[in-house]
Image (cartoon, rainbow, N blue to C red; front, side):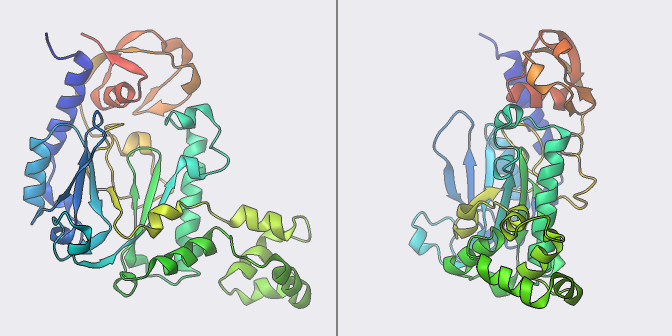
Length: 337
């Protein structure tokens, strides 16, 4: 029995990508001190506690294994391949903030978002939340350096914001919890904010241009049009606290392929202009034939220049292979001979 056409398409896509990638694109700081994990889409158990002494050995390993999700640790260890977590020799962990579509309250109940295929307005909201996290909180309020912050597209439904700052590598879980509580507005004293706004005046607070929640609320509240509670709700960001607090977290490794989309987990230099369904597709000139499934919930969404529509449902046509892989892995199409 031959290999199913759609499996062959996906396998070729992953193999050619890893064969052709410049190994240096797989580099992250302290790579030999990172733990790696690999998860096949058809398996429940992750292969982990692996380490690689350089990017060439990592590339060779990626070319030798079946299609997998690829993860590396936010932590650095003296002995990253030790299977005993207590014996790894933890030396610190980067801080990672994860922003997926399900962390944006306006998107949580959208059918297309739940199935993991986002439209342009969905991406605009996620990018806005990511931008505000970086600029309004990490840079303005916490004072991190831009050089310590990187943004990676997750390869699927959102972004990972990573803070690699040596003074904060060993920040405790409690310290990270306080950062999360600040960002999501959980511990704010609403009565105190009301009192200070009344005492100092909104215009004066804004004029001081000081970082912090008082200034943020004063700018949003706008001549009494919104309550303090409404202002806080519009400013606060719903970050995944579990990701930030986990000192041994594995996150998707840069410039690997997401095994549920075939897209690149890639650094984002310009968040505003970044278009995931174009920029994160693997460059490819080859076309393959697919048969579309029911595309009605995704009408108007563009993937690599192909605009999905109800009219394409059930049709058979040739499309760019990277587009085909995305559609096949999302269950929106099948490979066809």
